[in-house]
Length: 428
Image 1 (cartoon, one colour):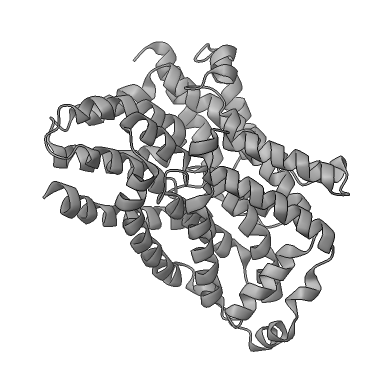
Image 2 (cartoon, rainbow, N blue to C red):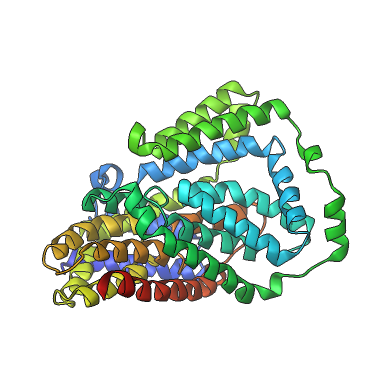
């Protein structure tokens, strides 16, 4: 590697250590690392701010901005309080039943929406219901972030890397449904069972609070019915546009911004109130992280690591698929899976031409590794970072290691379950 590539790798690792140690706030660390990489010419302003391959992913940033505004308006209608009471009553106040219900909803929603949008919608409900039942909110939020990453694996639109893979490999929405959705259903069921063990200390049942919840009328929580109808109408249009992306060809970021603008226009909420709900530190952290990962792409660090893994397989389909699966999971735990998949896609396309048998197994291995590997660490997926930001804003701090100690277990278990699936369905 060149001197600049080594410098980019060292700065990235040092920044990652600072984020993991939490001696420096993650926003400071990400901005500082990005500034240093720009200073040493590991990347340029043009690459950092305007390149689709190695720059800030403005689609992600503006998708977050638009959905944060929509969620902020929805919060003022009382609908999240309504949903919290409804969920608690359906679970009859039982903490594990409640978590299972929320995780199923999260996974299903993430298959149709992107996982970031899903956690933005489910997190406010979680805060309210945990407050009602005197439950610790952190385990629920951590589990929901992971459920969103697992559920998003199921479809072409569920996770951005899947869109990149579909474009490069010529795969359709139905291909993802047929090949990945059955596995994701199994993974979701296993994950819920795993949560019973991982978060068992959080399931403290309070009969008195459960009885109080059962006496509540969720309809009384609605504060502004007119704004609720307006908000849900706009949100419905936005979700429909997300699902119809292959037909309409509007990027999710454009849809979210149009929806946010329309909602502010038609409701009585002021622009100051709408913007006050935006998680600005989270958006800035993403920008810094994108610049740092982009520098690794620009200097060839990610490409060299990926090629080394690919060359080690010697063209054997089984070995190639397994290396892709586990290497993708490991690297996606450290760097954002969007630039990683963008970098790996040409390599996998080249490998697919020289590997005998059903070469689509390579694409499924890449998708599963990149999507599920995001659960391993607190910064492995966009949904994780958003959950940490929402929690901090609401007075609940989830540390890097608090998330990661659970994430590593979940990632190892879910990726390991992909191994027999890929072997039995494609390789034997």
